Image (tube, rainbow, N blue to C red; front, side, top):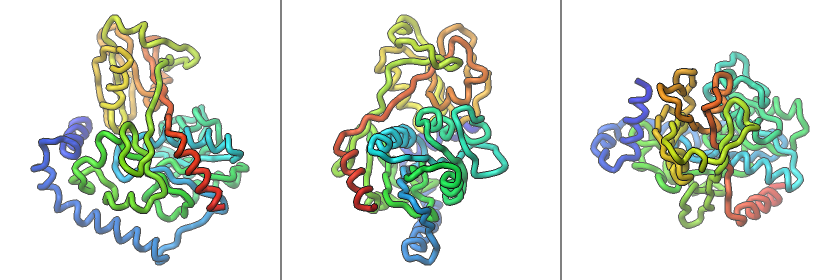
Length: 332
């Protein structure tokens, strides 16, 4: 049922032939957009307090629900900040995590069912302190209490205004852009498109418009989900079809990436942050199964020798790095 709703909403939000259904939902978007606008205005005018935490905060987020490449950009940021002499830490929402006590320190071996898949992925790929929690201010404070971080990157959180920020980076899908341009539930937007006018940087995955920085997600080597020290060239699987599984915001982008590697895929999409069970990645044949790295984090306990994942890395034009470091220097 959840999968059917996921596909229906995706078609309404991004499908070219669903404008009629989108218009029917449009009245429901008005109170949502009004509430979002009022809340942001309260923080901007100082009528609600935004807390500064004593170190620079870089927020990476988006105005649309679903996957736009935020987490790969966060990973890229951590490595670049470290190269420039910073000691970065990351906070994540812990979305999908069932832990009772928040915030939580996250490590590579943490249980994604407890703290969320994206938090574990960031800890694995960045090797830096990570904290997960719904309350972003509390998450940052817990991070600073136990580490020597001198800058914090927030994975998602553009709309969490209680946490004061020094830099805002909005990420968008350069192909799907803003869908039908409507706010939830008639469209995919958490905030109106005009919100992008107030952020410091806009990074577009795939295709960038004027004033935006282009980002690509690159990756060509498969890794075994049960043991990621084992690698495989996709060309070795090109002779026969493979299963492709994705529980991310935009599964089509992952499936398209696999096709560019010369793979013939049998795709199966799940909703974003799907809590995978063994049966979700088992099929009646013996063909290999390829998934995203975020999904592999949740499947590593029951994955077998036929299950592979494709790690990707963000590649961004050099001008963005220069502009970002310059912006941080001016903030300091």
